[in-house]
Amino acid sequence: MTDTTAGATQKKGASMRTVVAASSAGTAFEWYDFFIFGSLAQVISKTFFTGLSDTAGYVAALALFGVGFAFRPLGALVFGKIGDQAGRKGAFLATVLLMGGATFAIALLPTFQQAGIIAPILLIILRCVQGFALGGEYGGAAIYVAEHSPPGQRGRATSWVQSSASLGLFAALLVILATRWLLGALVGPDAFDAWGWRIPFAVSIGLLAVSVWMRLKLSESPTFAKMKQEGAASKAPYAEAFGQWKNLKLVLLAFFAVMSAQGAVWYTTFFYIQTFMEKFLKVSPGTINALMMAAAAVSAVLYVVFGALSDRIGRKPVMLGGMALALAFYFPGFHLLERAANPALAEASARAPVSVTADPADCALQFDPIGKAAFVSSCDIAKGALANAGVSYANHAGPAGSQAIVQLGETRIVSKSATGLPAAEAKAVKTAGEAAIKAALAKAGYPTTADPERMNLWGVFGVLLVFVVGATALYGPLAAALVELFPTRVRYTALSLPYHIGTGWIGGFVPFSAFAIVAAVGDIYAGLWYPVLFTLISVLVTLFLLPETKDRSLD
View 1 (spheres, rainbow, N blue to C red):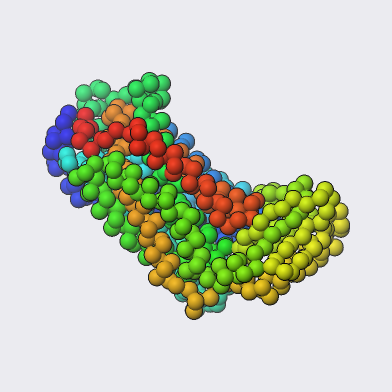
View 2 (view 1 turned 90 degrees about the vertical axis):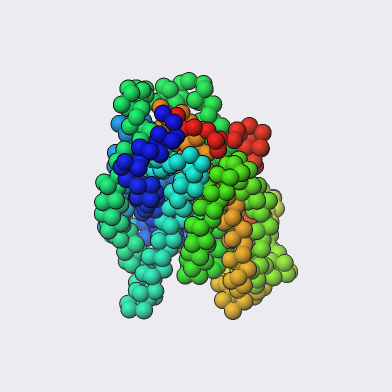
């Protein structure tokens, strides 16, 4: 069947506008459900990981954010097979039901103080359900729109599905910001963290009803319907997609050429930047939400711009330009971000640099999801205090058995160990050590929060926009490129797996991996090596191996 036939067939059913609107809106609602969690990582860490230290709790919350992504490839395989055998429509109708139900259930969960370890266990289960559902969502929506689209317009048509991610993020941030403001004005500043965080999750039940209603109006993809009528549908999608080299090499190419960079660039732009500004630059959550909402709004337009541009000049040059821009701007961009968002921090770091000299055997990676580790060694107390303060420091190896020394400009602080002491005494020693370091930081001019009067909001927004341009240039044409890369018989299965490994395993773990690297190394910029590595891989593979797909037929 030709693309022209597909275009004619779709006119007999739902209009192209209805197809794009229903697919994109439903996907946006699912992204809303998924992104609420990442935007509330700080609140989640305090609510469900109360038994951990501040650093360990925050790392645990970011890891749990990534866990949802880790289950996306499994959802991709399950729903991909359903989509390739039974149809596109039924598969991505089921995903929205799963996602909406799991998100609403999070609003009803007990806290750690109410239920102990049961609370984070239930949260993990629901997060896994979310990831499983989203694993089947994207492939179905992108393929459904592309298989309805007329020739020469697939980039622009599918870019609306791409923009749904930003619309979902915008909606999540808007609901969170509005809830914070409303509860702060009517109840008090602590209401949102205490119980108001449940409201954005509860709102999802209304979005679920709208999503289901819109998708019930759609008919099956004309390309799949024709293939099914001719008896040409795959009877073994897994064997065809991954057991035949001609298809497997396309799966590997999709992953290394575009999906490695997609996961790294997009989630650095829209999520790790939030972590960086909140945890290290000490920018207020309300300011971050407002900035990210503005960036998401701009990105929604740029997806369509770059998708349409790829219909004219090709998918490859647009996507390659986006990932190359991000690669070149990672380190300069985040340094500019510090100077614009918290100039006092940049000034203090230059005036009074910090170093930690400690016995390497005394230092641990401060992450313990079970909550049994105390982290009360001399080194751990020193590095934990600096990490919580968002301060970069250099590491120096000290003699075996020595206590950690924090050098802050001309000030020298010996961090006392609380190892082996009774719990109450150990807590007192740790608290005193942290207080001494915080006092020295304050005396040296290190700010505890970013000063709104000195913050260059336009400068911060300018940095965000550069990353947004890179992310949208890569992501805008991506759906069309992936759909065009794979044959119809196994398109849903073959497309979904590399997409969700890239966005799920690479992208979803950007905040966790980058923050964990920073906590271990001490340099607030060290975490950027994680997205740099994966983006560089994609730049090279795309440049030398990825073919242009713009003019391919979907037959």
